[in-house]
Image (cartoon, rainbow, N blue to C red):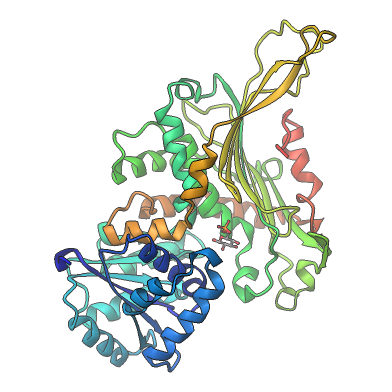
Length: 486
Ligand code: BG6
């Protein structure tokens, strides 16, 4: 094994929820797929008094719990667990970093990847402590989990503190939606097909919808969700990142800088939502009691941790406008919420109707649509029309869905977004990570909406758990002659 490219990975928050449910399973899978050749040791840190052996035992039990059953292989685990180590570390305690440094300095791997999965308010302190302990070198990188702040100001403050220690080229800001296969497939679809590219603009497209629907509620998220709400938790990052990939201009190349430059231009062209238009452009919702998947569930305000969070939305729908040549006049409808009727994420590109129809009784609702499903199944389908078959129906139209994904490929190669992102971070590829200006520009746009909600005391509409949000979300589109793709 050539050590010159090897990386030691240190996970802060190494016994936390994210690490247990996502990071360690993803790292195990990389090992299983023989993609962990640049990874040397994996050092989890946490506040608990654990010796490395007990940590490995816990990791063993948790991996068995969270990995798909058919992924478990005792031989892979044997190799994986040799990389695992644990250091007790309190983010504010310099002596704990000295211990970490001792461990790192024994390693032959020159690269260091610090994965921060703690409270974001600790990011600045952790970076500073790492520097004080002299464990940041030229081959060191830092990965920052979301949420990156609560608003533009707090985001800037975190970014500034981190930047005192790590250059932008060494800073990897996670948005796990960018690691999802179909989100990356957007680039292949848009720029690899002559069929779609020439029609990807306001001459042909009438609207774009992005929906991220969740069945889960917010129980167990404690005070985080009470102070956050759906706009900050989901739109600021995941939905705006997806929007910018859908809307960006062709990049000069597939290099990280070129792609991020184009995404950034989209974010800059988002028309601000302000006190003047917020009422027409946004809907806030909060789930009340209802049933999801046949099971009765409590309303948001009935959850113990959220009694007082009556200004927190669990649903948001909004109309975004991108003021540039390609997209002027095309609404981008975004919608996300908890306790909805199903768990799915999709992008719907709706094409304009033809200016004239030859067909009698042409059903007006049959527009061409490109539907890109991000999850739970990854697939792309094109909604078109053809002739209803038969002798009796002369030239009547009927909808047909063309499936553009290769099912056989799908089965063999599905992976979790964190596997992709960890692999890229180990290899130093920033393409699927957010640059500082992107995150801050997104916050600026979100802050304006929150400011407008406060200014207008925008009410939160209630919806029953197990439905697709308040009726006002349907009306948001209906007034413009559109409807949500269901
Ligand atoms: C996280 C949000 O970023 O994304 C959660 O904080 C949300 O509230 C989660 O549940 C959704 O991710 P996924 O991959 O399950 O769609």
